[in-house]
Length: 275
Image (cartoon, rainbow, N blue to C red; front, top):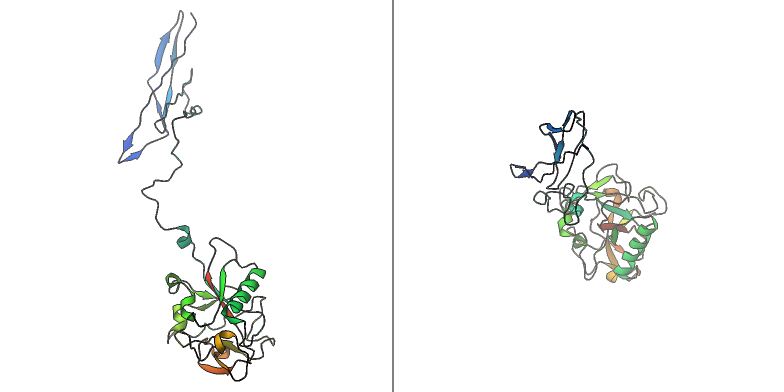
């Protein structure tokens, strides 16, 4: 009589402390099947896996190596690789991978007439893109409808450091730049232009002053921002600061015909990107 195979199918799930136990091999008691001449012991190996009916049978000598799991049926889902939804944090990847904010100078000095704040912002955008920087850059200026302080988002003002083109820290945070005690730049951390020059040492900027048009707290000064950065006349004035002093918001009234450094601050960033 032809010997028939021993078949064992089972559906079982096991929970311990609320979590599913899967993939645990278990040897069943040998079952003896009688044929006409000799009894043949057959050992079955059972693996419980994700509520899925699986069949692992081996004949002859017992083995610890399980067979290949049976494929899932069309109505079953393999959730073994899915995260436990109850343990996934609600924090988005943007908050897990925060980037510092870059402070970088335009590649050439500018007089007070920059075609308005939009013209200055466009220069920042254009030169940042030319260097492959992915964040959004805005001119470090107050204007008619904009306080310098408000350029950086409220959620980033205390948490993100301000760094130069080479990622050296200039200020602990955006907020510290406007404080009395932390408004001085870090030592030995120069400000670079988008094309990589140290503006304090490079002769392309003979005047080591920066335009800002703001109070020490970053608020617009309507009589001192070169008529919303549209005037380059000697008789019109704008507020500037000496970069040699290591502070960006000194209150020096200067003629709008002067050619000074213009800074650009990154106010948004691309996560997981190489700047």
